[in-house]
Amino acid sequence: MNDIINIKELKKEYRMGKITVPALNGIDISINEGEFVAIMGPSGSGKSTLMHILGCLDTPTEGIYSLNSELVSKIKKGKLALIRNKQIGFVFQTFNLLPHLNILKNVELPLMYAGLSKKQRTSTAKKVLSEVGLGDRLKHKPSELSGGQRQRVAIARAIVNNPTIILADEPTGNLDTASGSDILSIFSDLNDKGHTIIMVTHDPAVAKRATRVIKIVDGLIQDGNIS
Amino acid sequence: MAISVKENLIVGFSDFWSRKVRSIITVIGIVLGTMSIIVVLSLVNGVNAQTMKWMIERGGLSKISVYRNWEYRHSNYVKDYFTWKELKLIRSLIPEAKYFNPQQRHWVRHSKDDKDYSTRIYGVLPDYSKIEEWDVQEGRFISNFDIDQSNDVIVIGTTVKEELFGNKNAIGAVITVNNRRLKVIGIMAYRYMKSNGAFGNENSFSYLNRQTFVPLTTMIKKGSGTDKTQSFTLKAQDAASAPELREKLNNIILNLRRGLPVFRVESAKEEAEEMAENSKMFQIIFYIISVISLLVGAIVIANIMLATIQERTREIGIRLTVGARRRDIFVQFLVQTILVTTIGGILGIIVGLSILDIVSKFLEMELVAGISMIFVALLVSAGVGLVSGIIPAIMASKLDPVEALRYE
Image (spheres, rainbow over the protein chains, first blue to last red):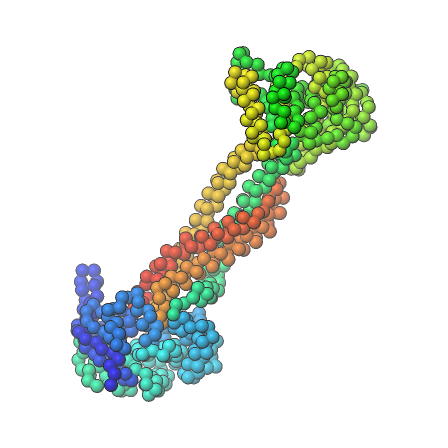
């Protein structure tokens, strides 16, 4: 199997004035292509920090992070935009759609920053939106959709660039049970199609969908780093 | 790979449109600023055009005038007048001058039967009419024969004609000036130029219509009794050679007066340039005022943009997450600001140009629009966008993605 993510001795500290607060205390993870990994842990355990570093929104203080054979931890913050654009798809608990853009435009956004032409963007985004069952709502604003539908838009946006990994941060946290399980089914489908998914959650029921669960406590892996 | 300028324009424009009220208020501010630039520049242009028109109406740019320099305190060592002999000498030294007219001026009473009219009377040569480019509307002007013979003839302005004759024919009639009977041979053409100022539609040339003219020789021999002449005018071949002739004439006169500046020698061309120079100072003052008011506008816009960016922190976070580079964010906000101010600028130009007529009527002044001011206004409004947009855009592009996503 291919190591798509390889993390060694990863540390992250936050400086708050004169005090240094450790968030990750040396983590080793390797994730293979096509895995569906759930990261679990109580609040303050460092799972969000790990998520941000995995998503190249933040950089580690120490340690090695390689994504798709590229040593991301050596790349400067300013150059990470390209990695985020090409390799990573994000799905958030609060959807994080742009409220003033219709859903087609929201899904087109990563393609626009990738420099695709308007024509290519629209056809790709339309295709992906119909894959998540929203092909007939293209001109709707996010506010005109239900929570479950919004999260499907977010998923469409995450996969539209065909990224190496999909990162989901509590994707069902703001949804009722029915639409929550809908969304989880979509993730399972994506995983079946070969997408690598990493999902942060503290709901054991959600974690059950994953092929592997990694537990983090106090910035350290407690259990589950075996595939 | 990179997002194109066109894309950024589209993003900026849709941003602009999605915040209509705020954008429109900002646009109105810029509209007012640019509008006033257009009006002020047209005003300055109008004043300049009026000055130029005046110059041309009063004999054109090739005219040169010599008159007593009142800034110089007269001393008894030098004469503050020219004698007939000196005038002849001067004329012979400047053969390149096309026309030459020494003149005497007095204030006298003109009477016809029971009617009186006191006004300025000029003793002139036939060249006067050529220099001033002003001819009679009836009869004839003073001729060389009149000069040779010191004829008792007079040419009168239209106001004088009306005062003394009313609607009756004046040509050939005799009027009394200073106890001497003079035959009216001509009536000068009526002169009119709209005055520039808030004092109604007055004729700024009305003083010309009140003048009368007699042969200079007649005035010397039968009127003033002296050949002392304090002023004369002449005309160079053309406007281009006028400054050179002025310089030469000035040196001749200084030589005749021991180097003392008893007389002023002025070329209309240089005078016009000097006036343009003077109005340039006003222009600069107007510019400074406009720039200050636009600067205030820029600060206000910068403030609005900063507030906008704070509101949109989360959006910036989302854009960064899906792959926007810092440069994309920077350009997006800068383009948006420049777009707002440029739209304001274009509207301001349109509004400014369309209210020129109203302002012109209100101020009783002629306003002249020009192509260059449109570019100035456009450039300034875009510049205001650039100045006010750059700091907020930098701040937006420096946001940390994680922090921005957390922002509520």
